[in-house]
Amino acid sequence: MIDGAGGLRVGGRRWIASNSWWSNIGPATGISRSSTFTRLCRPSTGLFWAIPGRKRFCRAAGWWRTRRAARRTARSGRGGRCPVRCCFKTARGTSGWQTRPRSILIVTLDDATSAIYSIFLVEEEGTASSFRGLAEVIGQHVLFSSFDTDRGSHYFSTPKAGGPVDKQQPTQVGRALAELSIEHIPSYSPEARGRMERVFGTLQQRLPPLLRLHGITTIAAANRYLAETYRPEHNARFAVAATEQGSPFVPFAASLRDILCIKHERVVGRDNCVRYDGRVLQIPEQRHRRHFVKVTVQVHEYPDGTIALFHGPRRLAEYTAEGTPIGEENQTQSAA
Image (cartoon, rainbow, N blue to C red; front, side, top):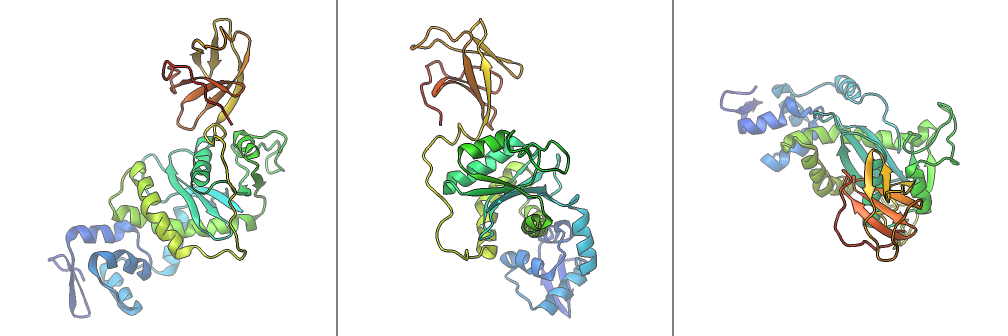
């Protein structure tokens, strides 16, 4: 039992801990296994017990749940089966970490080794979050050969619900993967989703207690923790060696930013402006051309909301998300 001094008495022995430690490790963290308790409490207390001692400790504190109850609670917090996104897979699912607004966990892993290469939380899943995950993987490890995803609307066009995807009408993500020469594989079978289901089972058991234990309450702080602390620890524990030797990555030297973005074509108006999504983008004076009236230009909208105009390989101007020009000098960089 827990006594008034903030300690726990088990088997005639009294274990002392601060009230703040109890509140972090206790029911608020959602501990359902004695091994999870040991993994969380050992860095703070130095305690390491055999399984019977752990069980007695957790039962005395009222933290222990039977396997059946723990499984039922975990399922109720998932909100249904999480669809698959990676021989690299990416997937999303509810994080199980109670934030407002509710957060979505995006994970990209190596199918050969089960190593996680990108993991972060977002408020809303879509094209921008997909580009972010791809940019993190390619930015760290360069290109890979294939990418396995579900058939979400930002990944594939599906004319008939539940039917095959239409690869002749690529989405923005599909177009970017084609430019990178990465094979895009749609997931049709439950077997293809099995690995990501198991990964999310592990993540949803481990992440909510860890985030609460470290007092993390914002998505920005959680993403820093996931990138700097959790991902290396997860890979050290769960990643395995690939059955075949060699690296799945190939060198890449083009501009990744101008591939992993939304692209649309627009015709310049008589006022030398481009209309795009309710914004009027004024093309600044160019040294090589007086105006671009009736010329077809390409609009690049990046995941951070900024916009750039291109005429062929030449960057004409860059704008903020509100449509305000960035910089006064002419931009002459080339797109990929």
